[in-house]
Image (cartoon, rainbow, N blue to C red; front, side, top):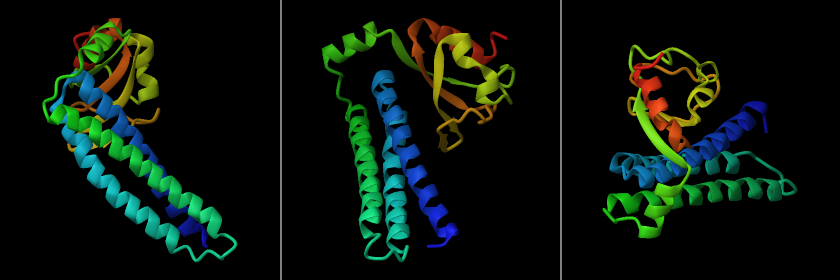
Length: 192
């Protein structure tokens, strides 16, 4: 197998992993925020991950491996299957919200009593976050909230420290409940 093909397999597996993790974060967030918008996004991502998974398996199967290497490649295919199963589970979580099912009273109490929460806010032009990289923004230091995902237009981004925040982005964050208002003020630009 040439290096270029090998890198395509690595990239496809990384995208599968990142997308399934993003789906879990969004699925939990959809339940906590009772957000049908987030739940619909999880459903759309599930269709996307089906395509990613097929592409990944085709890349692995077209690697031209020897019979001795087949066991190692079988392990890669199994990783892809497990990643898709995680995505399917996230989609089922999103279905709870889309079907309009009320959370069990125990879940509702647990969410209310939890020290952590999930919040979303849109970045305004006047926010000091506008144009900064996640690592420069120091949102966790300022608010106790960590960025789980960024919605930019129709695209969801699983942020890295070097991801730039832009006006119009919707930030989904998780963290200590007492930091939620500080987070929303920081993102909206009503605090500098």
